[in-house]
Image 1 (cartoon, rainbow, N blue to C red):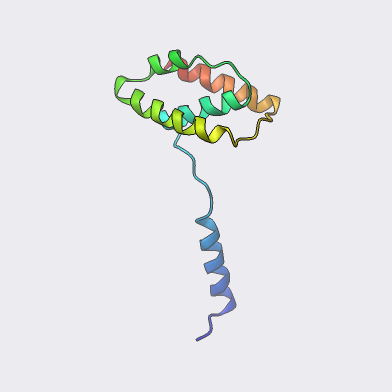
Image 2 (cartoon, one colour):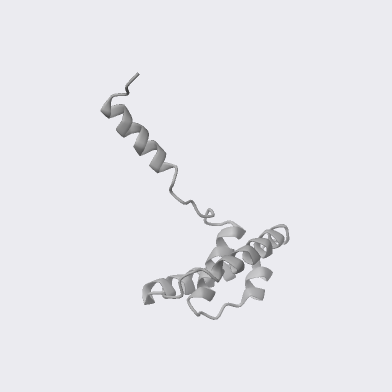
Amino acid sequence: MTASKPSLAALAALSLAGCVAVGPMPGTPEFTAAQVSRAYDCGLRVDRGRIIARLPAEQRGRFVAANASYAVQSYKAPRRCEASERERLQQELRLGARR
């Protein structure tokens, strides 16, 4: 049995769609932990204690666990950050610390 070319193309497109890496959802403690980790990678000062203090008590454990896992991954992360990314991270972390 031979598949037609259009169905092979559709199958290939679907399989590639599954390869897209999905990060944590914005607004979650895991997303904040990812932002903190990337900020460290970019050489920014991060007041982690202040961020943790602003999180609801039930989310603090999730943040700490996610942050620890990202810290391990950051050893392999690129250290180069553009000024625009650095500024965006600073702004997002400032906003997150105020919540």
